[in-house]
Amino acid sequence: MLLQRIGNRGIQLGRMFERAARRHGANVLILDHDLDVAPEFGRRATVAEVADLVADLSSRLHAAGVRSGGRVVVHKSDGFDITLLACAAARMGAVPVLLSPSLDGATVTELVRRTDRPTLVTDRAKLAGLPDSVFGLAERVLLTSGSHRDAVPLDKFAGCERVPSVTLPPHRPALVTHTSGTTGTPKLAVHTGFSLQSRYRPQASVLAPLVRGRETIAIHVSFVHSRLVTALALALYRGFPLVVLRDPDPGRVGDLFARLRPGILEAHPNSFMEWEELADDPRGPLANVKLFSSTFDAIHPRTVHRLLRATRRRSPVFGQLYGQSEVGPAVVRGFTRRRTLDDDGRCVGMPFPGMTDVRVVSRNGLPPSEQNPGHIEVRSDGRIVTYLGEQDRYEAQVSADGWWRMGDVGYRTRWGCVHLLDREVDLIDGFGSTLAAEDALFGRLVGLAEVIIVPGPDGRAVPVVCTKDDRPLDPVAWRRAVSTLPPMADPVQWRLSELPQTATIKIKRLELARLLAAGAGTDVPESDRSQKEATP
Image (cartoon, rainbow, N blue to C red; front, side, top):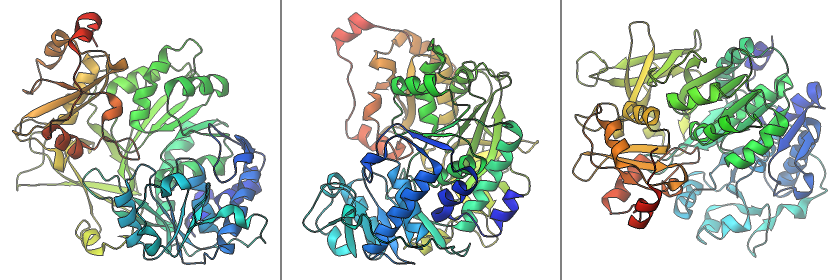
């Protein structure tokens, strides 16, 4: 019944907290950080209080000159107030455009240009990294903290008259987010209320049979990603107590989870990899987790194996959703404790019946298979409606009958399961699946924090290895682990913090390959090798 009501009008981003407050106003939201827009707000609030803050911010934006239909670019230091500002802009009919705090100044300036004279909401720290030309590209610049002679602080409009919320047509642009940028300058993806609701439906259909009672849900998802909207909607509309994380540090997360005992975790695959060490925490911070949920990318079997064995709940599930910023979740696969380290991590699951569909198209006229992967294409009502300022680029990726090319290659089994083998741009001739090789290495070397296989300058596969605590890699253990894998160059060891990452903590493989070709890397001192030789 709930899905049918929302489906008639799409998700109303601007009224999401307001609507949740009517049914679950006393529900609690907990943060692990303070809000720049309201430092006095604290880290624990009711949903009704958050809805009131969104209304206040919306009214401030209106008093500053923002109007319905206008675009509001939010590019500020990381925090949940990015999401609240997006809701505030949408509440009074504007279209929020969310840009990651990790983007460089030149990229931000180009994306602001594409939005065509928006209001820019930022802070002094981020503004300092932008060229002065950004002021000529924006209608106005508003600051959430700090000061600048050419910008207006949002605090100036505190206490202004409240403006009413508006209901937007379901097919009108409601939110703009950017793509990961793993293959170049990010694209600006335009979502509607209808497309966001179409992403909500399959996720709600998965959650409903798995979680019967009222569970605390903890979310660590990029504040500029559309996934956070649907994750919030799932929690808010069901009245789940909500924990929103900015910091993925396992030590701090362990402290928080040991106290709050979440029953559902939603996070990036790389965050779950970092949290593997929580499985050994004697306080049992993961002991109450009923459902682990991960979108974005396929996740390594080792991570799933360890996390599921850290919970004491009966029949816990690890839900993996494969999708993309442009189409939302496309296929789903659930894992239980019966999963072994030898399970195929490349199997990402099946489409949602009646909601998404997947096909694999040949690249060379031969049937797609494990040895001859094809282009993965998806059809879903959750697909974006355009790339802002790049309509031709959008049309080049979608067929006349609605199939969206994902940029990944793989195949489907006789039972219809989708197997993801690689990004098309990451294929290494004659190597096979780099992702499958990485899965195997994670299962064989427990001390790995990350391994990324990229093409070297000569086209040969080069494994870039990061270890826990930056311990030197044991060459004997490495040779044993790669003995049954396709031939590779010797491993190059980097610190995890040095890997180029996107806003959703994906590794920028093309950028990493470029850095390797330029001679970048982390050398392990010989003195460290002799003193700290360790087997991952």
